[in-house]
Amino acid sequence: MFIKLCGLRSLEDTRAAIKADATALGFNFAPESTRRVAPDFVAGLRDVVVAPPTFVGITVNLSASENLDVFDEARLDMLQLSGDEPTDILFDLDVPLIKTVRIPGDASVDDAVRAVDAWLNHAKAPELVIVEGQHGGAYGGTGQRANSRLVREISVRYPIVLAGGLTPENVEAAIREIEPIGVDTASGVEKDGIKDAEMMTAFVANAREAYTQL
Image (cartoon, rainbow, N blue to C red; front, side):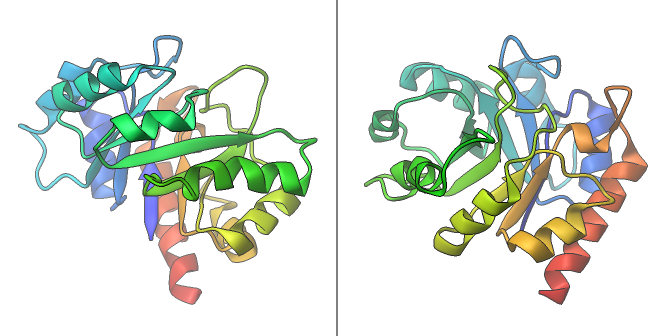
């Protein structure tokens, strides 16, 4: 079970996500993201929060060396590659990894499966692949869910984490329908672009209930 609350921007957000019992916390380092934080801020959280869950740092189109610098500076547990990185970058990243794969709404089943297969069948495959919808040129955090039919076809073949458009109200149904190994949300637990502690708590509780039933 992997339940990630992403796009945290403050100590208050982080403490609320930990209290909600998320298994992973996501911090965005992409320059163009409205949720961007600095690596040294995330590193500092380690000193002030108690028993933090997995810290995940989201990067976009950095080189291998740049990714490793962020990993070390932010004192991360995992890196999440969320850009258009080539699969060859995996040979140069000897740290725990997640890869985000964005699936266009008009993609065929074969195209969608190939997109995930390129990463999970790699010689140095990432530990997790997150599947979400593609929204223009944005690199995640848009609330765009991938086509359910395509995601079902992918999840039959591969263990995936589902993201995009997930909220406290729909996460249980999504888990039952797709049966992903995890779920991830950013905008789905926000009000007016700000993280909401009650929504985070409800999201994690509802996700855990769905996994218990599975």
